[in-house]
Length: 346
Image (tube, rainbow, N blue to C red; front, side):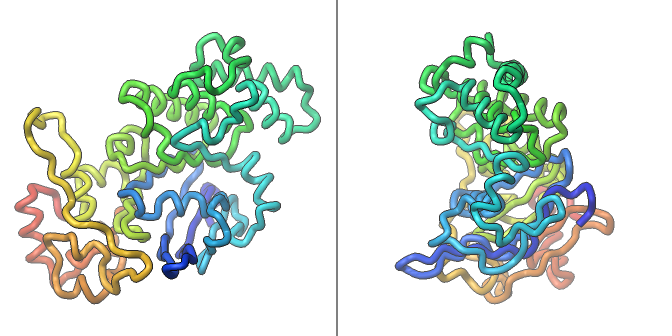
């Protein structure tokens, strides 16, 4: 693993054992996160993006969850089989996670400031409480909470949704972690507050040089903050590319579907959006071929029987896609599709 690689996941398989059978939630996922980089993971609900993130921090319930195979390296150390006890100091200092609803993470019976102070002092037992309090107030100022001395004394229920999310970011960043995992951090917020939180995350990253994994179903959020994007579907990665290539040169039909289903600036008020028809497959019995084939308007016979291999787009590109349209024998079909879409084809 390169020295500037903070996190590397290799061929991760994660399942849940249920009464109905084994749910294969994550099926062979591989990606890395570099120092100071924001990696966006995007996909529909149930595609495996949150399970993947919680596999890193060991927050999936185990049992019924279990890592079937694969590896997770953090800071060059294999943490795949770390116990909860071994993970505790890592989660407290090195990797922090923020969620969609901060009320599930913040202690409702403690003042915001005291929660942050407690986190700081757990990681530095030699720090005096007065110094931890000063650091906390400074962090509340960094995340943009007005009058931080007053916010320090407030309880979570006394803050608005946007202010609670800022407090949650302050709690996560107070110990200067190497990796911040944000699981749908703006979904419950209105558009204006979403934009503020995203700007704050970019500011925090620049200030502390933190690596970020941003999990979302919203491509608008991805376009604002991500450097690279991983597109997940049915527990696998179907496309990986820079944020520019995902929007300017998408190669997988599922990515096209995600892009076509969001409103554009030129969309008329009564114009209908184009949804992705059908439903994701049952992960108790995942399909043998491409899992998107039943919903794909460009599916060929081979798509239903064999899983496509990952193909690199361009000789020196980070753009990779798993789709049979990339096969040399499908060149004519692919060219026609791209002509119809008015897209760029490599």
